[in-house]
Image (cartoon, rainbow, N blue to C red; front, top):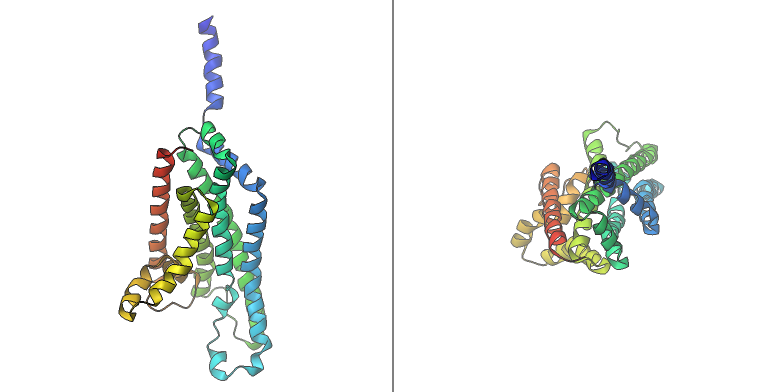
Length: 274
């Protein structure tokens, strides 16, 4: 009797076995059932796709009032991609809420009951959120760039898509925003509170640069390249900032910060109670 039931029991356990693809499908469902997901991603998309052409239209609308030096200084690439900061903020907030929302509602306990090892839940959240963010921001960046250049062509200050800085900045916007979202999922996992995670992101990206700026110039110039906000922005812009690493070098440093935050989040996720 037991020998006959053994194969059925083995098959049932195989069906119920937790695998990363199954956890990813679960996280995909959970992500799109959140109302905040649609609004945050819509805001990020509209900001990235629409703010750049709006800036271009304003610049072309007051072209006759601009002095010659200001006309020559127009950066058509960065203007057409100018919405990425707002998009980054929207993605960052959603990244924090992706994990802290489950802690707030208690759903995280159900997630960990379904995946007792816990880490697959974190990996799945990172994979799903990063894939959605990258695809959406890449499309939005192309729309913003092409729309902006069409407007800039009125006075022949537009830049071709094939220009190396243009393609690098377009893909850079998508990469930086995606890495920011992954970083904020890690921050949300570490603090487990929405307000705390958002405050930590704002402090690192907006408050810390201001504090560094009031230091003596030699100290500020030495610290500025290592700030996450500075390291992440170079790849998303055609015009390099002063006191910063190369675009890819700065992005590598920012990815290092993100990986470190994810590692801390993974350790705490395993050690703490839900």
